[in-house]
Amino acid sequence: MLKIIGSILVISTSSLLGWVYSNDFKIRIDELRYIKNIIIMIRGEIKYQKAPLPEAFYHVGKRLKEPFSCFLTTVS
Image (cartoon, rainbow, N blue to C red):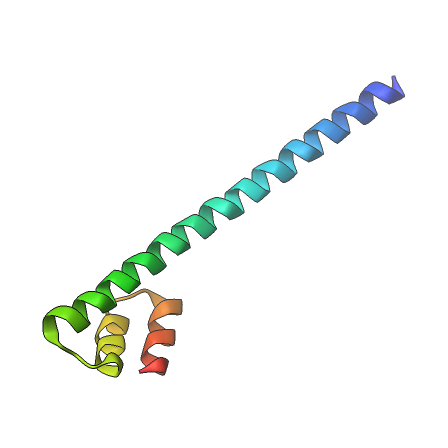
């Protein structure tokens, strides 16, 4: 009886840890896709508007959500 309870605990905790790690990886993948879009936006600013790098960072930074917006406006 004790072995069955122990094995159920081990299986359930490992399943829970797997779910937590997979959720973290999904969030990370979404952030990386957002960073890719940021790079595309900066490239477009430079290519089509012929904006220097500080101006491109500033204009793109105004259109982004908070952690990335603050970073780009500070860099500009």
